[in-house]
Length: 132
Image (cartoon, rainbow, N blue to C red; front, side, top):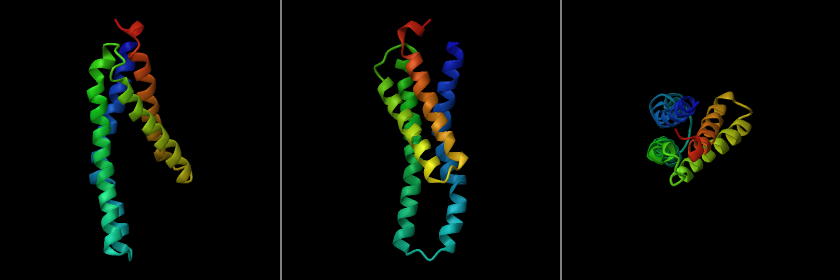
């Protein structure tokens, strides 16, 4: 069972980190087209790009935090689990709020599931009774 829990933790961590590249290189294409077709002032368009790429960077950072937390979590130590739980909570809340705000666009459930996977697997793995 520990192998499955570990695989789920890593699935979430890797997809969170790699999501930055999908966001920054693929997801940006329809936004570029929409901004180009709009009459937005240049300063507003610039802010869109600043925020867009900041989010990509934040996704990499969240993934990196999960990678950093892993050595302690796998050994059953709670010392770094707080950081992983914050990332999981952030993704869970983001998934729920974006799903509702977007009119129930199913894409946002990915964030909810990634967050829940991080939370549940971290809580299981950090428990010393689950080691071995």
